[in-house]
Length: 368
Image (tube, rainbow, N blue to C red; front, side):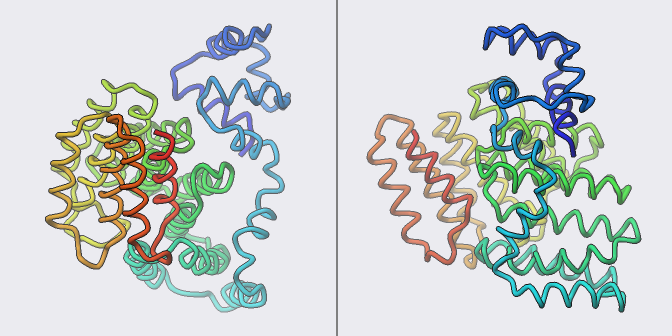
């Protein structure tokens, strides 16, 4: 997707006109930008130079690396091949891809079964292991994309793959999330379109990364359908986290209330899948959100509620809750104690169980 499309989408998420975007840049950086020049960016008639990319990064609240990555989009697939797929034996990938093309590959039902298995395994396996395995699945399924249902499956695999990169890494996670959204659109399945965008929004919002993109994808999900669903719930909670990090506590609290109401209608009975949001996981979302808002009472209540139902085979999420307590301590003024508490919680989890999200959470505690 061209840089112009991303600029337009981020601008529209804020409800700004092209003239308003130009004014925001002029006010912040003293430039002489006008509406017509913004229009030329969005129509890909002109590519913003490095100075204006920095301006756009600041006023649209999106990491500079993401904007620079869109400018260099032609190199994206080769970059992914070099950085993400390198750990996998290349001959295995190639043979799997050609075999799928020649012999048809797994059936749609088989692919749905694989997705279900990965959704469960994601909750306990490390990011590196999931990344290696899902990269192979993506090579195979891209040879079979001849039905809307397979596009839906592929979009969910792409979302899972994106989760193995930290959102703060810039182009990798966000490019995959946006590619997943485009693929879901190919399926024509509104449930998939909402879920993919919502899952991306909560991932980025929870990580505190690429907040402009988190808002963009959340707003897209909410505009596609207002039917209560896990995708909509994720979108709302992702947008709530983005608001809290920006300091807009009123919006974050309202969104948290909206999320609770959606959860009452769409919460999961399934307990241990990345495609599920049961009561304990909803409380993990609320725990961190309340910690970011400085609402210790709500945070502690959510932590207790989560612990009561959290499956014993998911120790990583216990670590999440303990690190939320460390964040609360740091934000209340005990910076050294909060960092030590969070670090002890992270160190108590075996290294192979660590996730990228936990590392980003540790960095947030340290910044506090």
